[in-house]
Structures are given as structure tokens and as C-alpha cells.
Length: 335
Image (tube, rainbow, N blue to C red; front, side, top):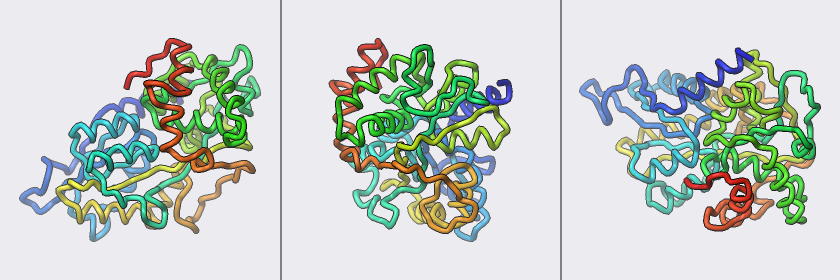
């Protein structure tokens, strides 16, 4: 597991720091005419964004643009921008982290009115295991068996964890038709979770260090590990959720024209192929090499009532399904 441990450790170290492009200087425009944009994003697409930024800088629109980049847990990143962290472009794991900034007046209300509804990438929730899957863990039910340890982040800090929760709930409740079955499943599942990190990348680090028999993860995270020759297998459950990741330009960007040009670039075939090469399902059709399996019972967050309903019902720390699950286990739900 040394290779996977090194990979995850490097990713985790990078995700907690704010990274500045080598050619970047202070905020704003420099005397050389260069413009600096700040990208604040959730942790998992870091490698993709690094390559996309390089590709953008090779275009006429991006040749004079440098970037500062901050990567971390989606909820933490959203709250940091809400509290004053400078951002020109924000990219999160899930819609409520964007909605928080809309309510704060930092992102325009019409951010989601485009063809892709403001989503820049898709993925699905998968079950990843040790190489060879020694305990034969392939289904949602397998994760609740006695003696099985499952790694997933804390849903009160991690957007990825919320997708994981809703994937398991939706699958076992028949998309919410049998709510009690879904709630019972979440209680059983989290009894098998020995540690809940605050982000998906940190959960990968925990898993790679030898903790756990399986990890619930983004499909792109599992692909990322395999692409780097890491000893990990994964299964796409027959019933799982479509992950939809939002991006937007902030209303208070000091360089809105350049920020909007970068946002537009994210939807080009070139950028979408980079996302696909990094394991993300593109939101633009016809991307070469984007061959992903179609789960027969794929569902969306809309099938479960949408994020506004789900956030209140499942993730309100003052009283919700997951608050009850976590309190029963003695796990912190403080943000």
C-alpha cells in the first residue's frame, strides 16, 4: 500500500494549503499587465484544474492570467468564501455550497440558468476496496455486514460525504419510497465507519494508510488511484446517485471578464476532456475517450426531492436524520 499511501498523502498535503501559481504575484493586476484570479475549489478535482489552468493560459484569453488556488473540503471552502476569503471562481462538490454564497450575495442568482444548470462535471458514487476485493464487497448491503469497516467522510463538513449518504439512502429506500428502510440502512452503515475525516481526499489518505475494508467514494477518485497504478479496485453499484458539481464566477470578482472567460473555457471540449481524463464524467457530449458505465438504476438528487429538501431533512445539525445517526455514535456534527 506504500504507493497509494504516498499518493493520498501528497494530495492531502496539497489540499490544505492555498497554492499560488509560480508566475503569480499579489492580488489584482500587475505592472506587467497580468491579471491574477483566485480559484477556490473542493479537494478532489485539483489535478484536473492544474492541467486546465495550464491549457487556459495557452489561449489568447488566458495568456496574461495567473491564478491562486485553494483546495479543501467543499463545505469548508464555501464557508471560507462566505466569511471573506477572496475568490473569483468557486467550484464545489454540491449545489448547497453554491447556494450559501447566493444567499450571501456573493454569487448571482442566475448562476444555474445555463444549458448545464451551472454544473461543470458529473460523477457517480462507487464502492472501492483493496486490490482483489478480498472481502468481496460489491453491494450496499455488503457494507453493513459484521466485521466490515467502511471509510467515508463526515457529512457535516464534506460534500462528498453527503453524496455518499444520499447514494446509500436512495438505493436502499427505492429513491425515497421506503424512507424507514433508507434511515435504517444509514444507521447500520455508519456503525461500520471507524473514522470520519473532513474531506474526501483525507478519507482516501485514511484508507490508503490501511484503515478500512472499503471506501465510499467518487468514481473519479477511484479512477485517479488506478491511473496512478495504485492497488485499488472499485464497483459501480447497480443503484447509485449521479454526482453533479457546480461552478460559478463571484459577483465581487475584481476581474469579471477574465473570470468569465475561464468559466467559459471549462465547458470547451479541451477542458472537458481533461476532466474526463481525470475520471470525471463530462457534461458536454461527444468528448473523446469519455467511456463510462451506465448504472441501470442511476438516480439524481432531484429524485430525492432536491438539495433544499434533502439538506434540511438529512443534514441540519440542529435536528435531522444524519444528526441523529451521528449523535448516536458520538460523532461531532459541529461545522
